[in-house]
Length: 203
Image (cartoon, rainbow, N blue to C red; front, side, top):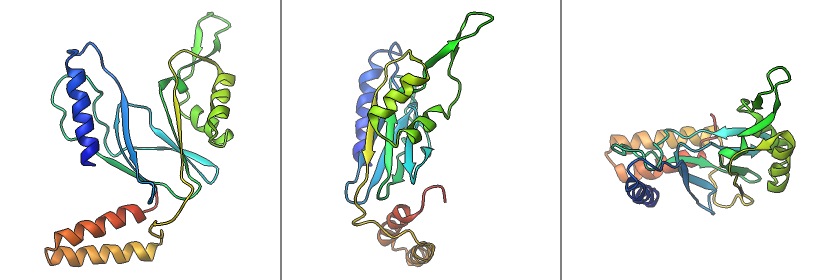
């Protein structure tokens, strides 16, 4: 988390040198290969997509940071966490994944642009998370009018993960309360980390 924060500040300092003439959205992330935890900072970038058990949804960050190069104080840099489980596929993509011309209006002749925020979710689900098929699915929907980049992260191992069980979560909560009462903040922090990793997505 500290590394991500330092990296973000370093890049912000570089882009501030352009005095607002260049602003960039970005997503900084690190993946713990043992636990499957993703630590990330989203600075105005399209949300990542999780494909789990054949269903897709956006991974929402707790708090979005301003884009690189925007003037003013950086403020609090929020590090978001997401827990992957065996078989999960995460797709990261740039704006071009949704900036499509779908056709033209028969009456006015004007271009019809995509306004469906769930279009990309459906393409990822239909493509089963395969990058080439995702790209082909995008092309099949319309004309790409922006740069497009796609990254796939797949978690294949479950070793080291904390079992997602409601009883386990309650036990961790109780342990944290005991640590809090004792002012044992080091153990409180450790138990909190376990709780974060064990908590089911969208619970």
